[in-house]
Image (cartoon, rainbow, N blue to C red; front, top):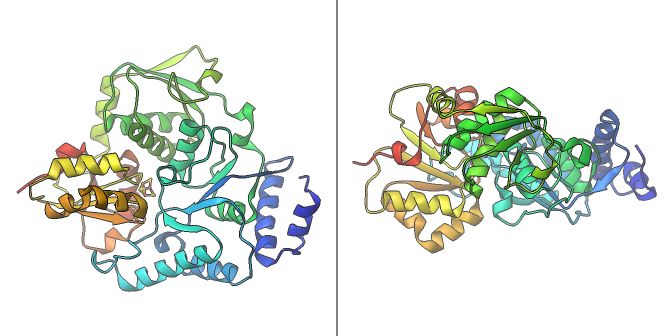
Length: 392
Ligand code: F3S
């Protein structure tokens, strides 16, 4: 891979050990995928944050990396969700040892110059690249969203490569950074109108069919940003979709030259919704905000529970930024008065909910329905918000 004079110096350690180690990762990746060069990035989103997934080895690696003096890059970078609400873990009964180590992990990222906002919806809180910007994002739902809905360009980075890109401010130019790799591979005609959790079911079906391909959708109705957030998460988790196109909606859809369409019927959607639940039992925890909730989604919850008392435990997961807006709007108070909570920084998949006494988790996210059984070993119920939340 071609390196500029400055990149060679970075790679030789003239800019310090952390930059040298990060360049090693980027050059190795570039060589594997035959990238011609590195390209400057505008934004990074770094996964590998939860202590549940990276453990002590990850914490030691990050603290070692952060011990070197470093000139931070100008890249706008944020973190993926952590394993706890970083500030309020005690009030939500997160395990103490886990929570202390979790905070150390996030502190180490902060020393490396990464903004310590932990969210999988960075595009809702100011980490928003422009159309055609090169970026290095690693959370799979965010990758699908930023490539497809915003039209910025990223590969599905791993945590270490996104971190290396954030530190150096560059990423190898291959894969989804190139025009020729952004063309649809399979087209789907969705015959039925979709609403709320139908988008997750659609993403689940299509992700399974296309794997790492690029689906093209013809839809009957126009999805809003929350629908596209759900669709992105489902596509990226049941398959490995990094980019999709929706006719008349996403910015690069005109690239399509596909004429053959696979039909998705109302029946397909309904069968998948049923299949995503693993039990008939009532949830003891309802966990919303996968991907992290937008202000509009929190408003919907507040409107639903206003002046009522929720029967089950309820968490709404979001970023600290969106929670601040929900506080000001009075949504947090409304939800708390009904017995629910808004949690920051974390989610039902990367938090240690399996150690917190819960057995059945109610979700309105196909990604969460897919991952909670495998990553937490718990049962899930996949339903729309209005069907999940019960009142006393
Ligand atoms: Fe985000 Fe956690 Fe879902 S990281 S996409 S809320 S599994």
